[in-house]
Image (cartoon, rainbow, N blue to C red):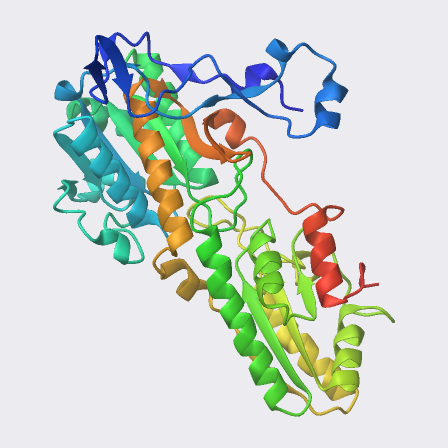
Length: 440
C-alpha cells in the first residue's frame, strides 16, 4: 500500500533564485503558470478508496504537482545539463530530447547542454563514446524521426564512474530517459552524488513501450506502439480470411505486462484469442488453447491469435537461466513455439492449415511518435526541466489522474504495472474476443 511518505520528493536545497520564467507586472511577480506548491494531487481516485483509509486529508498520500516554480535552485547562467537515452527504442525519444533542449535554452537560458551517446556507456571513458553539444538548431526537426539521435545501449555501468564524469564536466542536471532498469541506475547515480555532497539533480523521464511503470497514467510511446501493432493484427486478419483454414498469429511486445496486446486487440477487434503474461493458459484439454483455435477455425473458417512475448513462458522447454545485458531474464520465443504447436495440432487432426506468423516488434519500436504521444513527450520534457531547475532529484515526471506530477524514483520502480486479470481492461478483451476466461 502507498503511504504519504512514499510520495515525498527529494530536493537539493532551498530555492532562492527568481525563475527566468517569472516577470514583474504592476509590481507583482507573474509566471507562465502558477503552480501552487502547497497543493497536492491525491493518490486515491475514488471515494471508496479515500473512505477506506479513514485518515485526515493532510495525511492522505498525494503527489507533488509538476510545473514551473517562482523560485529555482540552480542559477541558469552557471548550469550545465546532460541528457541520456537508455534501453530499447521507443516512439517519442527524439521528441523528449527536443523538448528538454528547447525549454532549457529558450526559457531558462541554460547555455551548455550535453548529449551522452549510447546510454550509460557514454559516461565511461573506456567506451570512447562521443559527447554531443545539443542546441536548438541541432535538435530542429528530430521529432519527425524515430529512434534517438543520442543512440542507446543496454547494461549496467558503475554509478561512481558516471558521477566522476558529471563532476569533471561540471554537469549540474542530468535527464535520464529510460525504463525500469535505467531508472534503477539513475537512482544509484543520484545516491552516489548525494553521498559525495555533489549538488547534481537526477530527473527521470520514464520510457517503457510496455507501459509497465507504476504510478503514472501511461508511458510515452505506448499509444503509438499499440496503434501500429493494431495494423499488424488487421493484416493478420486479412491474411487469415484469404486462405482456407487461415490462422494469423501475431507476437507483440510485453515481457511482463500485456497492455500492448490488450489495447491493440481492442483497437481493431479482429483478434479471437489474446494471450498475456498475467493470465496462464494450457495448450491441451477440452478447453485448452489448441482445441479452442481449431474449433474456431472449423466453425468460421479462420482465426487470429495475439500473444505478448512474455506469455506462456512456463510452457517452454526449461533452459539454464540466462539474462540479457539489462539483467532481464531471457525469454523463450513463445511466438515460434505456438506456431509449431498449432501446426502440429492441425496435422494430428488431419486438417488443412494456412498459418501466417507476424512479429512487428522492431518496426513498432522504431516509428516516430503519433500526434498524441508527441504532445505528451513535449509536456513531459517541459515538466522535467521545471523539476530539475527547482532542485528536485531522484524523481520521475509522469501524469496521474490527468495531472502532471513528481514521483520519487524509488517508489516508481519498486513494483511493475501489470494487467489485472480481474479488472475492466481484461474483461473488455474477453468480451470482444469471445475467448474463454480460462484455457483448461
